[in-house]
Amino acid sequence: MAILVVDDQVESRQLIQRILQKEGHQEFLMAENAAEALRFLGLNGASPSPAGIDLIVMDMRLPGMDGIAACRLITSEEKFRNMPVIIVTASTDVGNLPAAFAAGAVDYLTKPLNPVELAARVRSVLHLKQEMDSRKARERELLEVTRRLEEANHELQRLSSVDGLTGLTNRRRLDEFVELEWQRGSRNESPLSFIFIDIDFFKLYNDRNGHQAGDEALKRVAGVLRSAFRRPGDLVARYGGEEFAAVLPGTDSAGAQTVAEAMRRGVEELEIPHGASAVSPRITISLGFATMVPRPQKKPDELIAAADQALYRAKREGRNRVCSRSL
Picture (cartoon, rainbow, N blue to C red):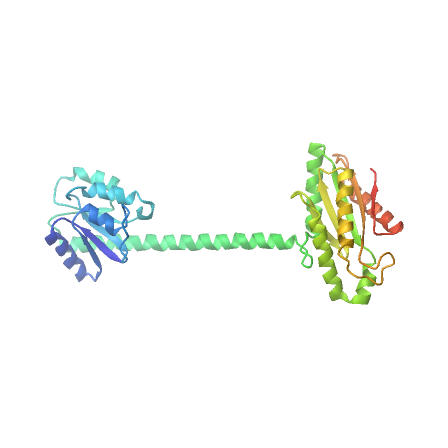
């Protein structure tokens, strides 16, 4: 990283360079006016110097734009807001110093330059810049760590709500969702439908084909159940084993019947062979649903129990069908 020296007098630029070289500074950029300094910084459409700049030592009196105006322009840029600028002045009048500091300068020196003072001021300013750069780097690292932690927490939260085999929502999240939608339906006086789904004779399928084939069948059935929903507010979940459940907020009995029948038909159309089924040569599902308008004095357990009873009826009446229970 370089020190940018801005002065219209070549002797002054060379003097500053010699003094600072004795202090171990090796990289310098020399500008004789503000426009040239701005070009080094990549302002006004120019390409920035590849060396990069750590510090600007700039004379107050420059041809064209003076040092204070140039300092103000530089520090007004977001990427140079913390660029240290030392103003050098041949005037003993300190009246301009408030304007220099207001423009963003961090220090000032008077001519003729005292080598010891120049070296000490530069050393102090660069040390301060290094501390600020280090702090910013730590802040960036902290922000990145925070971002990654937030992503990890979101992912953990997602995983804690997802069934590992089918990718559907799990039972825990289903219970939370039902409670939430029950409260919403109670406030809005809108219907809430709950559907229970069970794969017919699935234990026999597993016994005959093995658990690996059973897992594959569960995933394919889950895919059909998921595709039956078009609204983002609906939810389908794996309830446990070969049982699934669906929640349809704001859906009346006719709407729930339509969705349930679409699921039943979609699973049948998978045409997964099931030689052990007593109802069909392929995998089928039985579904039971119930619909009610939630009330503050009632519990969602009543709706779920009604859907379970409807599912039991569907099994009793021959399976591979949709049954409902009125409330």
